[in-house]
Length: 92
Ligand SMILES: [Zn+2]
Ligand SMILES: [Zn+2]
Image 1 (cartoon, rainbow, N blue to C red):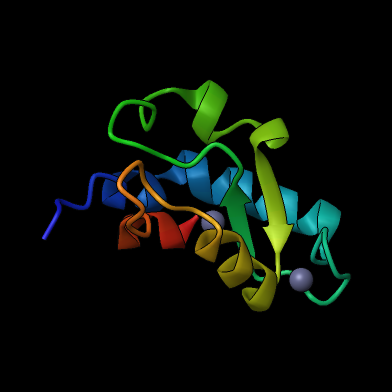
Image 2: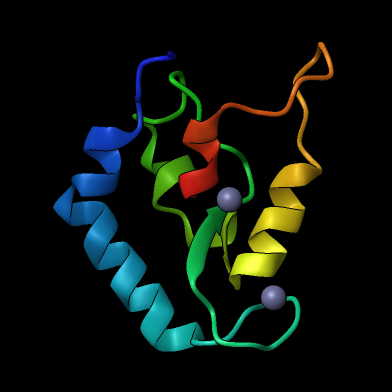
């Protein structure tokens, strides 16, 4: 298993506060208008950018999605070898 590089980030106070503030402002899935569930990072988090708040905590780099739209989004992501992106990315 790949190490869960994002675990500490998703537990951090900075992320939880950022996420709560975004949810409170947006509420609905930005693609289909159903209740939003997941704050998705448009630029996917990687071990390299996880320490960069301009990626991780930037309102321009996140999108509130419902579960269906989030799954659809991640099914669209494959790595250079054509494999789906690691499970880590599913969390945001
Ligand atoms: Zn949706
Ligand atoms: Zn996502």
